[in-house]
Every structure is written in structure tokens, then in C-alpha cells.
Image (cartoon, rainbow, N blue to C red; front, side):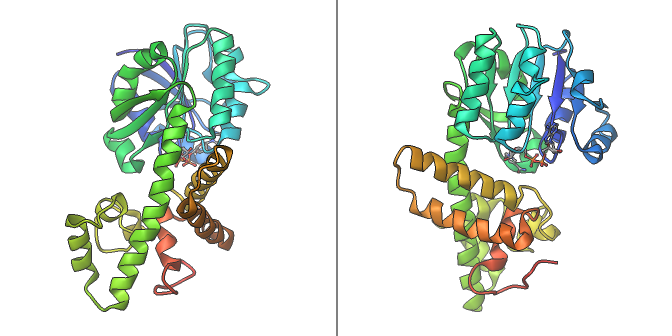
Length: 304
Ligand code: NAD
């Protein structure tokens, strides 16, 4: 595997994903608007550039983006100096960002109109999954684009799914993350109740991991410290996956639900809880820090 890849957005997720593409033997150059992120990338031996102009040229055969929101993907692909107007027709575009379905379709159509293959390929599995290349990747796009992208997606992830046409990857991801937001609150409620009942949290955690109350937040990413090494709750809630990102995903889920008249009352409650948490200045904390406000101030709040 030795393709010339341009990678844009080397934050918490993009950095290890780009590193895995490099380790697989590709020639990769990365760009980020944050100088700090570029410095971090350099430390991983990734070649960095200072502008999109320095990144995109006719030799690039794959562009991967890992950006925060739809507006960033739109700017990068469709803006004044948008990628779609710069790459060759045989270049494959892979947007791994979690964004709204409409923007994903709009970018995909613009690429398609120019004869360029594009997929939306949002991921789940967190920073640990990105580092270990065990991400679940949900792809929307044509079969031809999926097949072309597959070897590269396999370098970054373990389970790769073709969900349907362009935008379906983000549709699947939004459904997944609505569940994740709800279950993180549910795990926090249960562990808080155990604490109030004066039952050893470690015991309850062990029981829940093996019983019917298990969930990803319980088994992999518990919202309370002292339960699983390496989880953000053990590191003063340094993200990981930020509360701001979860708030964004719950907004996307609620907008989608409205658009198709789906009733999602728990998704709507989860959005209210995360929105308030973010308004109180906690957007940059890990999303598992929501446990701090669940169950009537059972823990120290605000977070230091
Ligand atoms: P992040 O904020 O750490 O990284 C995003 C990077 O994009 C930042 O470094 C930022 O400077 C850069 N960026 C923003 N605008 C840019 C532009 N115009 N040009 C170049 N770079 C730009 O976010 P993250 O946690 O890595 O998440 C990225 C995406 O992945 C989001 O859509 C998120 O919802 C999704 N996601 C995150 C996780 C996770 O655990 N963090 C898990 C699954 C999916």
C-alpha cells in the first residue's frame, strides 16, 4: 500500500488515524488549522503543511477529512478554494467527520457531478479505537466508491459497514450516538444510585458489566473514576470524546427525528441534559463528565 494521501483535521481522532495510514506504508501529508495539532502530528513523524494549497496537488490520490462539524466539511470541500475543484477525477474523497446528512449529500452530489468518487465514513470507537485501529466505520456512497476505499478503511478500523447511499454513514452514526448519549446518562444514573445506596461502586460496576444492565459506557468507558484504566473519568475527564461533540450529535439526531416525524423522547431529554451541561462551560470536558450533574450533585461540581 503506497498511495499519496492528504489528511485534513488531525485532532483527537484524526491524529492516530493518519498515523495508522502512515504506518501502513502510505505517503501522507497532513493539515490542520491548529498549530498545536500540527506540532503533535510532527511528533508522530507525520509530514505537516501550513495550508490546503500546499496539501492538495494533482498527485494526491486520496483525501481523508476528520473535522468537527458539517460547516467545516462544507468549507473544505465546497468553499472558495474547495478540494472538489482542486483534485483530479481519479482522486477518492473520504469524509470521516460526523456531520448532518444533508451536508453530506450536498458534498457527495458536488463530487459526483465532477465525476469524483466520495464516501461519508463516520466512525465509532473513540480515541482508543482510533489508536488501536479497531474503529467501526459506517460508509455511505456507491459500491464502487466503497470498494475502492475499503483497503484504506481497514487500516483505520476493524468493522467496516456499507450502510447505503451517500449520507447513510452519517445516518447510521447519528442513530448510534443518540443511543450512546442516552446510555451514558443511564450508566451515570445507575452508578449514582448505587453510591446513594452505599453499595461499593466497584462491585456494582463488576455486576453490571456481566448482567443485563451492561452497555458500552459501563463496560468500556465508565463515567466514574477508578473503574477502568485509561478511561477519561480516570484522567479528570480530559477528552476522549467531548461533551460539545456529544451535544452536536444529539442535536443532529433530534433534527433528523423531526424531519422524518420519528418520536425520540429519550433522545430529546439527553439533548436537554447535554445542552445545559455545555452552556455551563463544560463543552471541552469528556462527555462522560455528565455524571457530575446526574442524580442531584452527588459529586463535586463544577469540575476543576
Ligand atoms: P477534534 O476537535 O479533536 O479534531 C478536529 C480537528 O479539526 C481539530 O484539530 C481542528 O483544529 C481541525 N479543524 C477544524 N476546522 C478545520 C479546517 N477548516 N481545516 C483544517 N482543520 C480544521 O475532534 P475529534 O474528537 O477528533 O472529532 C472529529 C470528528 O470525529 C467529529 O465529527 C466527531 O464527532 C467525530 N468522532 C469523534 C470521536 C471521539 O471519540 N473524539 C469518536 C467518533 C467520532
